[in-house]
Amino acid sequence: MNNSIILIDFYQTSLHEYSDRIDALVETARVRMRPILITTLTTIVGMLPIAIGLGEGSNVIKPLGIAVSGGLFVSSLLTLFVVPAILSLVRIKPSE
Image 1 (cartoon, rainbow, N blue to C red):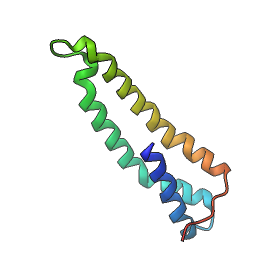
Image 2: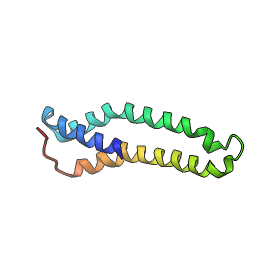
Image 3: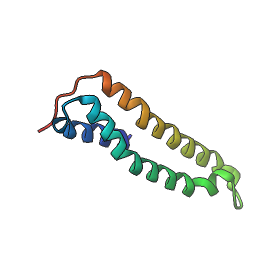
């Protein structure tokens, strides 16, 4: 959720720098893609031992690791593709 909020805020502040809002949107998505992917991948890799079920008693928390990793993956895809698609359809005024 935070990635989407930051993406939208970054888009709003960069709107006045570009003549076309699609150009602003593409540049915003390009700039924000690396931080989004880095935070997602590091968290998924950190949750990997839990998701695989390493250690004693891991069968209790294994579903948590799977759910968190899957949720992060899906939310990152939504942030990188769906949010910009929706923003391209909606008119947002540039922030000051």
